[in-house]
Length: 135
Image (tube, rainbow, N blue to C red; front, side, top):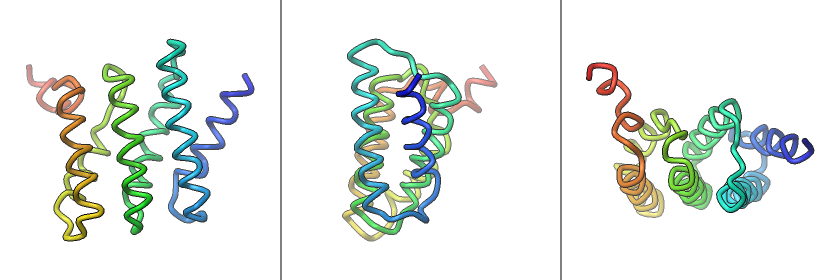
């Protein structure tokens, strides 16, 4: 549908940190509202979209601007809370752990809070797929 196309374009903007950061901030805000719309309407986002979304969020978490990182953390938390059983957060978690140790508080605090949220809402098998493989 038409909305799906918009979602794909949104992610296109977010898959790198090359574009204007204001465009990426706007795209993150749109993803956030898309996720809450899906939650409200029980609309399911497909696996391919979610997989690209995780890569896109991971790219934005790598941005040198704390504003972008903070927004990406907020969207990551929203996605995890909305779809805990479908959000494979493995790449994002590694980036968040790294970020939570940077000396810039404006980046480390949102990253730590986001990590904490993910630990609270995601099942252990999603947080640590290597442990799930052993069990």
